[in-house]
Length: 388
Ligand SMILES: Cc1cc2nc3c(=O)[nH]c(=O)nc-3n(C[C@H](O)[C@H](O)[C@H](O)COP(=O)(O)OP(=O)(O)OC[C@H]3O[C@@H](n4cnc5c(N)ncnc54)[C@H](O)[C@@H]3O)c2cc1C
Image (cartoon, rainbow, N blue to C red; front, side, top):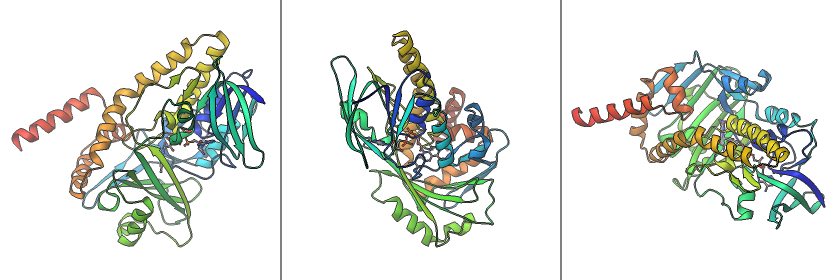
């Protein structure tokens, strides 16, 4: 039987980042069901320049965005972003780079290999069953196990600590070349074309643009494919300056859309990334958070193993909750409200976005809510109710 200190299930940004920040003497194995890291693409890759710099991600893995346009059926809000600029990530390139950061460690990467189940032993260790596409079934013994399987929450499910989320965002994206599209401009659109969700146009740094739509299930019966087909037939894309050719690549993915829970440590089993519901509740943006949390978890786990003390992991869990819980609770409340919006509500919302400063709009996208802006929103709401 293979054995290791830390078994990481899932080779997305969260799992890869845990591996890259473990101490070199810790033996880790990553089990990843896909045959390549970063392929197929299951995400659209919008993020922020300041975060990519803080995470030391090389510039070659993103396209800089300094214009962001919001559209609903009858309103628009157009921003030239001067300060907190956005980026669109080259997902395959970035994830392969994240994997390379643990190449020089005692880390094994098992591709085309699916985690099936795990059982905790009396001494707290785990015996996990995995199945390789060619190598078949085998077991791995590990002291720790990390659930980095994204929305699938595969390890949580196997150990009875949780299950797949019952509310999810599902997205479909077409990727293609369009030579006359301005590659510094991203678009977000809402309204009758994507009623229970939103659509986006994200240009990449490899000369292609991504046109996507995401819907929330079970809030709507429509599939993203139905929504995309109706959008293509609607003529709305002409208004956005987007022309879809006959030949395009399709990406699709799923993200949890449920209330945030602060608990991430279950003894020697830890969840990170989307399996810990890390993505922002307003825009569903989780890549930078998965990388950051993965790295912090790797460091905390290394100290816990070296010092034989759980206090480092406990501090990690506490800081995760302190950083995100309040904003994500407010953001999730808003997320539930807006999925019931009608086109006229979206027109009103986009008009409100148009009245925000650039900094306020970006804070909203980041699902960050400071007390001052909450009080101001509450005051304006009250004023409207009292005086019309
Ligand atoms: C349509 C869509 C659009 C999005 N847009 C953005 C965006 O613009 N910006 C942004 O920052 N975030 C976005 N996100 C969210 C972002 O993709 C996630 O927050 C991020 O990928 C979380 O990383 P992760 O490593 O936790 O999980 P994942 O990226 O989901 O990685 C988990 C990996 O585990 C593997 N796996 C699952 N089960 C098993 C198993 N049993 N055995 C072995 N391997 C397994 C999967 O194949 C997967 O590759 C989007 C998500 C979706 C679905």
